[in-house]
Length: 617
Ligand code: F6R
Image (cartoon, rainbow, N blue to C red):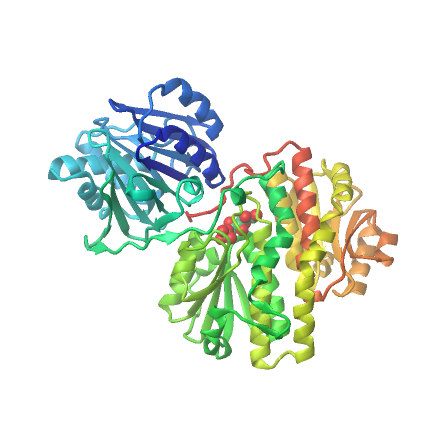
């Protein structure tokens, strides 16, 4: 939920850390801080607010730089966002300094114990407790920093990715991980090291990285390399240096005003990247190693349980419609946060599909662990390569959407649906629930989706005009049926999270069981009314809205006549197979919420109270 960055090497650490924090700001942005050793002393600067605020403040406060430092961008868990609660936190002696992403659940009892031993605390954070615990252990046991960190972490309950150093031994940084991600970038000849929550802060410096596993820690020494150990039993771990595939352009805005807009426009390519090498139309096959290798598990499954959160959960709902329709496998879609705590019935014959863009969502990860403990087979659908969920799953498929930086998920959603459609089609073929001609038809149509998304994006100006008309609405209703019901939910979520306008998504036919009472001349209702999805029934729903004076924005198939006559506005999307239509109908809804939020002056890429990956409960 927070972003951490560190540097140890021969360059000036300050600009590397500040730029790195800017790239990680999507992870949390209520406060930020930096600590450096300038060759003589420890310099710390921190502030409530964004990294840009830190940059201003620290330029004045830190005038001498050095080659070792750590930085943090925060999403508060313990203690309100203010200067004092911002990281880094320094120990009572002023010698040790720490940054931390995660939560120390037993911090209160640890704090009481440390207080009874004379320690004092400036902040309300769990992190300040941890650095003082490390200091206490180091002093009382007379051990080196690495050992002290290890002993302290064995007393801690919770989740963490931490980086710690001692101003008296600045050639060494100690890092550790449990539950929150931590990557170590390794410079050429091991003469410099980068620490970060993901690889984006260091990809222009090195493509070689080690990802720590849970319950691992590393002591990183200048010119001496990295030693990774298990926190629990101190055993040494062989490090696996991974070669990173991302490049700098992928994580920059590329001329767009916001990451969200860039990512909306990237969808044609992202969808293509998702099916590239998997959808082989000429041979009429779908090839996905994770499915082929585990085909029996899928074919013998009693049911598929999908677990996810937020937008990924909406992609899961679309998958439920597609799997049941094409592959005739019963599917249940669960909020990971509910599933993990409600004592669900899980058997060895269940397949659990976990969907997560970041691959780090704490609830989804916990749901996976629960399902695994009951013997279920777990298949992960993630975007971030090497993420915790990808590693925790028995098998999986990456979405290959490329880095998604905007907090509101866009291309992650459409690429998740693409992967899940490929899986459903592959299983349908294996089960014989789809005819060969229908299968070919789906492959052909899927290949045409990127071009059709391109086409849907061309309605941008029209959508901007509609956004301008409805930007001051207090509420909005989103309706859809069948495959497009989850799209209505997703459209409402997009609007809520970036414009802060209250919005509800509903199955169109459910409207008459309650929400219809909300409709009057002030209620804009966005209705997904494409030709193939229960069209006539949705038209009747539109008539019900119209007779109550609601304002209707129809998302319709190109050339539509009937809805056009009833609606106040229509936005056309190209025609496609019904099962694939969510990939198109979601595009105007993303653009509508984007433009409304921009017109309202909201921070589109970093909406208030949110963070990109929710690594806490
Ligand atoms: C909404 C959004 C969130 C995420 C949710 C799950 O735009 O981004 O609702 O979808 O936090 O995140 P992942 O997919 O990373 O598990």
